[in-house]
Image (tube, rainbow, N blue to C red; front, side, top):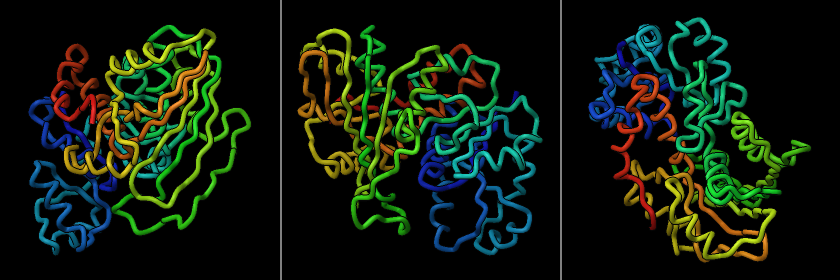
Length: 348
């Protein structure tokens, strides 16, 4: 089997994912990493050049090729060829479902297709380290859980499922940043509330986590709210978990320190955490599922409350990589993923 990966899109998720693949291509046992950029933009020439230097290849539509060549990208070819040659296609655009209908559904179905969490209904939810077993199914379509889904799922897994604690209720408030630091559009000048559009779960965040665990036969009582704040730093998650039995603060801290995918921090402001990620993360991204503010954790009787920062654009990256590597290396894919341990911090 050839081992060719095609990433669709070069935005806030696509760009670091392409770099992550390209710079670790040999360690992951990949033959090629190709990315599809639809629009030739002169102000994004530097971004494309940087990805090519990392070892990725660029493709576009046939009608856009002349414009890319004018920009100096002569080693570019038609995306139709890439569609045929790729064994794994990862859609990092907000059009995954449309692209399935228009393009992917007509391709060889031995390929693996992945889309991002905004494309609800694309396939089975997957989050690296949360439900690895789902990759062993016969499905060829997977939905990479969103950043807040990764965070909430890790909170539930760490403090409930991994410890055999019965969770009677989980409530979450996603304090969302307005937009990415690379974006000019959609900034919110004031706190803006998200509608509770789902009668059972509130917002889609709790619904998505419920569906992720329901794939394993676990039915959890979860509810979420969301509000957009005028900041570009980080999403922040407020959570409260109610259990059947009394818990102790010392037990909770032990659970947290054992977690593979949650970091801890004494920092209480998102700008401090964001700054650490900018300086020490990959492409400025922290790759852990969440960063728990230790001093925010509060335990009383059977209730745990706290705050956890969400590394948006970062914590879903390794899920896409894991879904790719497992497609090629069924027996030792987890060993290959250890190359990314260098980017995982336990405390910041």
